[in-house]
Length: 245
Image 1 (cartoon, rainbow, N blue to C red):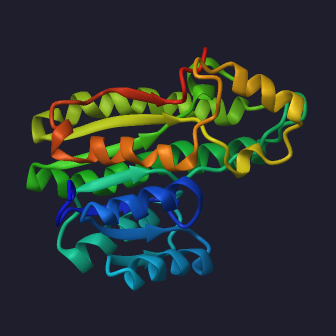
Image 2 (image 1 turned 60 degrees about the vertical axis):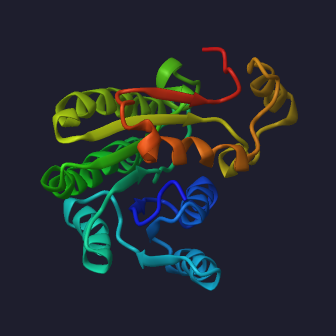
């Protein structure tokens, strides 16, 4: 029970890795706000948690606006009285080569993947500073560290999150708030449609020679969210099998 009585907000937690992180945090004793913009999926995860005896409430707001972010964070404060942990997981992709990418492709990805990290962090830190405690975990990508063909928008957003993480860590450390990022690499919906030949190259680039299983990722989040990681901040943890950059 590493997160016993802690309150966590996980954006984009209605599906994929966000859902798995949420389920793992509940096992460790956390109370959760499940966030996503599709109520059907959000409610499904909330039921999955509450039916197993855990505590979770839904929030369907988007991270792309400050009012929406405040509602997401305030859902935790209103239901549980505080917020201890924020996982900025919400993300989208609109892949395309620069010769084809549109302004909307660019703006939509930057709005969710970068601005959304800012809005939710800004809303959460107001409470965390007052209580002099907080754990903020952002989700980044190898694309943000080394770039990737067809992902100029996504790469730019994730690179921004890396710099944002390090800056916030330096500013918020005095308030006992740690800010770190995790760079996972496992097969998700984002890999759907990728030809097998290309997928083999992606897999071979890793020192361990395989993509991680989705269930192998959440323990990293648990560690950084726990008091065991109280002296770790401004770090980018690559949970990617030793991906070559």
